[in-house]
Length: 109
Image (cartoon, rainbow, N blue to C red):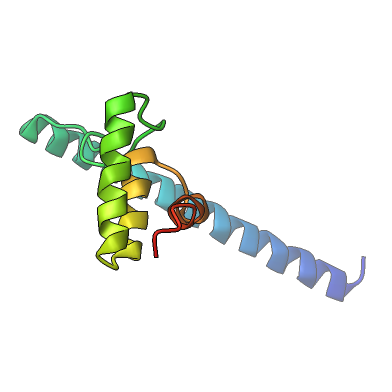
């Protein structure tokens, strides 16, 4: 091998070692953060997932759907279309596009 190839290989090896060290440090930091979060959860008796407003599926109750639709109609009539989209997204867990399409389907303008 010539000198240039050897220099490139050495530089590549050094870069790989630096990246491996950085990844190891990041993993250590994440483990420390996870441990700290678990301690906080134990102290306050909660789970981080409990505090997130996450719904995995749309509500199935007929009365809940009627109440939701009534609230959406009211917001649309008040000119609060963006608020109606947000309410629908929170209640059902759908994406922005789907929520906007649903709100637009009311045609109450």
